[in-house]
Length: 258
Image 1 (cartoon, rainbow, N blue to C red):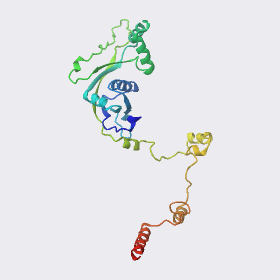
Image 2 (cartoon, rainbow, N blue to C red):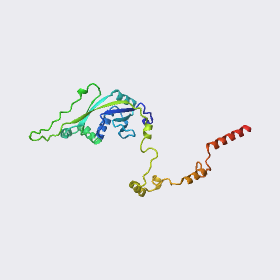
Image 3 (spheres, rainbow, N blue to C red):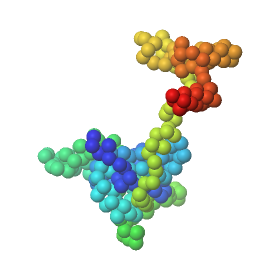
Image 4 (cartoon, rainbow, N blue to C red):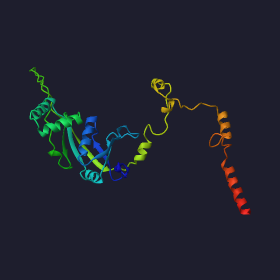
């Protein structure tokens, strides 16, 4: 809890991913990769932000050293793709045939923590010049239309290379909260089916704002109430700024004469 109170200026990292991620499995792999630098407290994609940026992710580390180490390793290149299901199944079967092996335990825990772990393969490179050293996927096999018996083997692995650039995040998180869709006041659709259902299910009107809709009053009635009541009900007529100024000046003259 102490880290939540500390400033996020030195712990927030702005990640720019090229090309942009296409599913939640790839986003989860990015989070798992950067968690190796240190514990992550906040991981948020700006794809559905008020000002959307599909290829941008904001990461807040627990320690400043983890954020500095992450930016020091920039850019990070990652090859990620789906391997053949039959090959992955055979590898997992061979691992589980060895009782008590560490690989089997890690595979079991990884599959429970991440349902995409059994289908995602990745390789990491933190150098910007060794692009040729990355493992290349096997070439695609084009179908043979010569009339021979078709080959029903699984297709080769299809992968993409992601380049991740890390920079200090300059975003104001207070502004991010203020721009949220559900921050501050919002209108309630009283004619929707969900609202009508909640009205009957809500045990007490004080538990929600379903029955707290302001009563519509004519402008003449509202103006009379404002003249009669100022700050609160029964407080008297609301004073203008000039009346308050004259009242203060009169008291000042009274103190001066005395």
